[in-house]
Image (cartoon, rainbow over all chains, first blue to last red; front, side):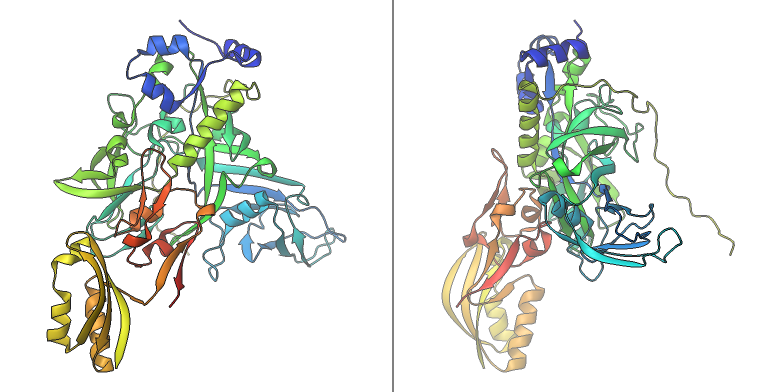
Length: 383
Length: 136
């Protein structure tokens, strides 16, 4: 048995599509074969809510009179990109002013979503076509012409577990890591995670409509560092961080429930983003993929105190139990991404589809079937 | 001089005899006003430390170097729960088990009775929702 996007969308429009979250379908899979699941379920929804540092937003401020070509731009005192024409900017989640390390690009993006006023100050050299040299004013969600979230790398497929073997506390983007492996942190939504439910991205590609920050957004491209070469386990799950998606959506329609600025001690600012992807059950293979359970999803344990040294592997059932064992030593585990919010995202997307407000899209371009990540080579540079 | 402080002990520190150490090695006159501590579970002592200023400073350094957390009387950790995203980052850092997250609902639980006011949560919360409050 197979099923097409058209058939699924027809059912969604009629209100007869059967939609389940990835957790619900994983429970079903304890007793049902992929063939039975395929018969019963049309769409499976996923969700994740975590720190996604490679996120950002394009803004257009509008032209003042006389006009200015903004070359140096600050929003609430945070320097943002002046590298685009005239009155456009890009706010990256990690943009920051070192004098105020707990407020940065991620917070600016959240404040725009919240409708708060932001102080815009910009400078230009003054040109014949753009004579103004300086502007200082207030902007907010409603005064911006466009505010488009456009992130080059979101929703990592799987992620490393971080621990610290040294005798000093390490403050990392994986949280506070206590000395002597007193704790370990993990950051994937496991069986609820979008790219773990379609591990080869058979249904996720450019143009896939998704849940993004509380509204409908799209997959814009394969994410940066898209990696198909990670070893996979017997369930087809890549071990460690592998594929990613680039996302795009209207920031003005998003909600601070799912878009939150954040700051990690001694690391910097970032953005917690909510992303949910619907997986259409087109055939038995996909039904098998969405049936994946936490104990079948494995990942690497790395020493973040010591150059990401590989220490071992574990799985998400063990991680969620609150304690893993590594070489005979018990290590307390805790998450860095919110499972509570990930469940809300998967449930919300399910509701949208059940109500007929959200139909599925066939990718207009598939993800690369082979793509690897090269390190940065350091070569001699002649002065 | 005399100084009134709260000493907080993580579970693994309860197997050591710190009070004995600071009396013997740092010449501290100690008066335990209130003890709420159990072996292997951790807890707090409200004490007055008596002695020369330098002796008290040296004893406090000895205690903190060994993981005992010293706070002025009445300080507490406050959490702005309304803005909490339930990520779990604070639970990862929390050494006393006061902050926990887990099945079935994966929301954050804060048990102030277990808190040793080490302030690691203040640093670890990505949303900066913890603060230290002082009240006599």
